Image 1 (tube, helix red, strand yellow):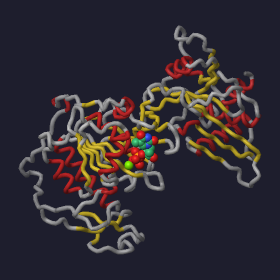
Image 2: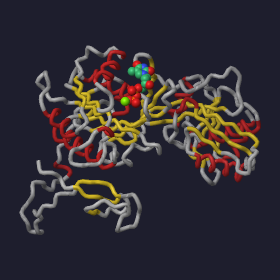
Image 3: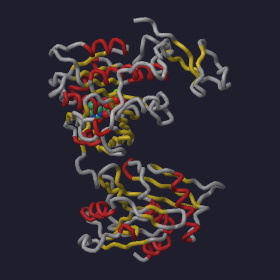
Image 4: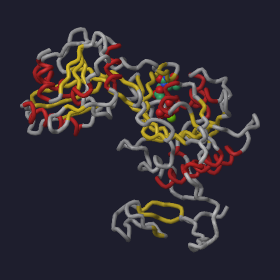
Length: 461
Ligand code: TYD
Ligand code: MG
């Protein structure tokens, strides 16, 4: 293979130079030059009247529909976030903090998949000894999993292209992790953006050409993005992201992007002595059952992906002793909190400008929906006034800047889920009120359409 030509590209303006420099000569930014492979320029451009290439223009109706081939991993929560099983030839990026369970999950799923497809686990981070130790711990040592310890992408592709001991090429490959992989074409150190991007590009090309399903493990940078400033996210079909804290029992996987399924789908696992176990009925695991009602706590029903989840939201509102009161949000967008406090002040006359406000979502869940707005308002109010809300109420609904309570999708499904877990009173947007005949037995529904009504309803409980 001819040696690829290396050039230096500014990550800000995109200008390319043949030599590295501390400052980009084009845009003047410092420290933005990164090593890349120069695109091979060929002179095969044809004029408008040139001869036809291999691609053809087709009408949409002439294109034959083909179902993607899927193989279930038999790990139900992983299948759920993948959109119903692993699609052949798809590339999935799995990101998360160190120690969250990426290698554990992939070892388990590969062991399961290797029952039906030839699989290969490429480890660049741990020795074969360590990987096999983990497999032993998980009780998977006899599953006939193939391992490879290699960090050069060219070698990986050569090995993966050859039949294995059983006479078949691997159909599923795990690369753990993409940051340790390097290509011979570039001189920069493994883990550099250019290395990560170029190695991933070669692997993706290989996966697409051969129909191999590929899992790439990606590390998270200090800023919380998948390292290699998100360069990988648009190259792959699916981006899965571990949420939760490595110290906690529950680990969640969210689909940030999925070309073969619903986005924002959440898979829930528990970390045990025998690896990750799926939590098949996760709805109520995030509730801390208080004996007595406590001030500042309320239940909301969120819908992450395609199923409803009951979540406990806690607030602590306390007199502030600093000039700038603290606003702390765990599991929720802090801007949302600021906005809702402003709405409470403007539309219900409740002023918290001299109070510290802390909000926490129990269990390390991160909410991406706005349906928890009403819950946040009621929790803050309950803590502010030190008045507990009854144990059996829940609420959901979005709050607008004009003080209106807006409906949320799938209201009926959320009501049914909470009723199933024994909740008796719901405070919900009027537009989410079930139609006549669709009432839920034993559930008392209070419909509200303004923030002031929401607060009156809570005080009257
Ligand atoms: P690991 O999967 O190596 O995390 P990552 O690849 O994301 O860095 O390990 C996750 C953690 O889980 C590790 O600290 C050990 C722990 N663990 C268990 O609690 N039980 C188990 O069965 C295994 C294999 C790991
Ligand atoms: Mg690992």
